[in-house]
Length: 329
Image (cartoon, rainbow, N blue to C red; front, side, top):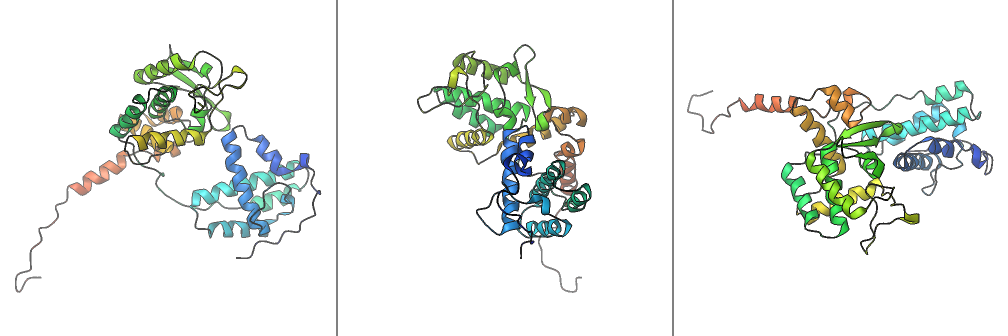
């Protein structure tokens, strides 16, 4: 497919401080959000330019018009990506054009026309799979068999993941001050820097306390990086936070050590929501605990309708295999 033709005004036409790409990324509050949307814009830039080494920096986003953005949407859809993944790129595209408008590089009419793109419609089940209790238990056992500081940290980390359903970036962003042992709670900063309280099981609290006996009381990340020598990475004496990807890597490593199939942090989140709803927790409470902006999103993880459909099918009896008699239907 031919890329949409957009006239490049030449290098240096948009100053670094006035680059909508950088302004948009700077407006995002989370490091993981910045990484995600940077990747989206860089891929869109490669579609626009045809240059597989291109990034979104310095691109003439302000020159995009409706015919260009429609073409970009078509090309992204034809990549074979999931509708949700395509829509994430469209969000990034709209937002970078909005920054171009805010910077005075596009008129309001030019921006609104170019950004008037329908999302790719879809209806799919939430990605991922359930995490059985025995799988989570096996991963915790793998942590307990590791007597290094990482074993205590990872056991506490997995207990928090299983008992709160937090996103991996949220766990990576936890600080020591976010933990309240008396209330058995954690203060979590979610998407768009929204704070919420999540609550821990007593078993998770016990694992955090065991980890803190190793970690110490220095202000900083609740779950910091640990070097190969078993020491906390603490530049300036402050334990340094891990990335969300590091959380996923720890989970993969502990599951592999337990001989369990691969699961993702989002699988733990999916399981947490499903277990809450199975236990009769109302949808609004489940939504608040996991930090969804809409109850519609939380409802997609409800396994109860699926169970009822399975039970309905189980009422059917499969006929026994037998040959037809002569003269039969």
